Length: 301
Image (cartoon, rainbow, N blue to C red; front, side, top):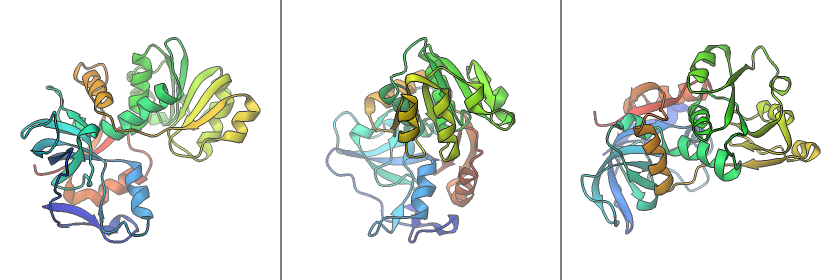
């Protein structure tokens, strides 16, 4: 099969499209013929610094495609599926555990479906499993136009929360169009001064932005991070909690999110579609930190 194989850590130039062995599914796994895969920040962060003994490797955690062979209950050859790529998603085939994929609903294309797993499960877990967001509460979401952020805005709004999104000037209309009640342009406003009494602050950006959300949270509230360590000291001083969240693969959660997309209650914004051969450019775009929605690689098309 064709796959993007990494032989050494480094920049986008270490991503090489080449011939590789097709993975074999183990018991409880399925072999997926990949039609689309998405690029997530975790991909290029991993690419920069691999753990010893993990190379060569195929990156990519999100895929959508067709079951080529199944060694798991609940999935059969020909099923249209999406979910987490067990053996790497930047490839024509990937082997995945059955518990980390789901049936793709009618009405959702492979490109949309490939944008759901990591971003969707991270946003959902951060808001509800970790953040405990309830109807009527207020959620602040930084990087609200990004891959995780734009889904988080929609999930929070669908759950009956008041939503405040942050981002640059160019994304104001986009984020408000997703359902946000208020938008803070961080290039013109201080987030810590513009928002207050927030129940759940979800920071998808990291670095200095993480610290900026702490003053917005009400006493007893929570700041949830996905890109930086939670600001524990600052949180304790304010009387709030600070927790780290990350996506957990689950057939049930993937199915739930996909149903929201199929019913048009939630949309997956696709920033750009690129063929697998342009994976280096996809990484460059992702690393720029200014992508609106998801970057999708098309495979075998």
